Length: 420
Image (cartoon, rainbow, N blue to C red):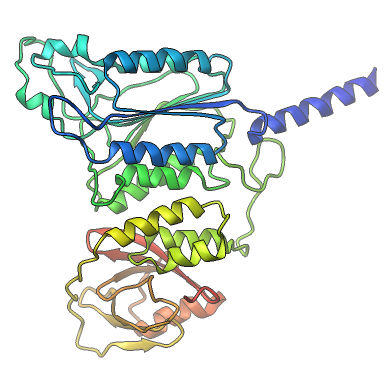
């Protein structure tokens, strides 16, 4: 009997490990991207964002990913009913909606493309209540995630006849508190609106699609990092927000190296993943050089598809030259190891004056960049700009810089052996 109990315990432990690691989970996802509205101007990003998210979720272990575009109300209702049958018995359900949304009387609605919303009371008959979307997801046994990239400036509200004096139409979406193992993620927090950005995809979709495929990102940390990415990309104008709470059981969309059952193994600080770092450089670059490097080195890598998308986005965009910041009277200095000429500004921060061709920093740092931190530490005013950068780099031939670039802030990692 003791032997049998031991065998059962081992089998249960392995079953728990497989569930925690995602190998035996059934994951289903529904993506609705509404762009071509009949009564208001078309939106620019939802279709591209939906396609980006579909690729990311497929790579993150979702066996069923359904992408539907430009749905009228009947189409949205059919899609939700159909998805509900897939959710029943699944472990994880993920719903992503990009398009217009509206808050009316404290209740949130998603707007189909055929909605006219001539009067405010039409919202209840022409739009789809968020409550029904939440209800559809409740069949999933382990985790439910609903992502709403629907917090844009709403053209319906401005032209709508108000007839329900006791119920207001809010800006953005209203806060919500889901129950159970559920998260509802807004691209902009309640009462605020989101931006479509200047690229092919919105800042929120770009951040989420990039983070969700990264290995070893526990879900709570993942959405906090998405929040930080969007704040940095929008100059702190847009702040995503996550509603709901989860249990103490960890969840990973993509597992990293694992140790004990259900726990992520501790990562040694000395361990450096070159593929991950090359992708991080590609994500934040203003030229295609780092992304080309990633595609050439890792043609079948975890981020190959995203790196190719980023390359196309950079090729289609034109980077406008930035005005050079004021450099203090002390002369700028060359940092040979990095190939940059750096000066100290009147605010005591470091400014990039120029970048040498074929240097380690080429494609990563640009004239006008402001360095605000070196290896997560404030700029040391007691040493020269050259010494500040060389001290950080010479420690382990790797330096992490927090760089303010125009209205955005990004992390740049320079490491010996990755010069382009």
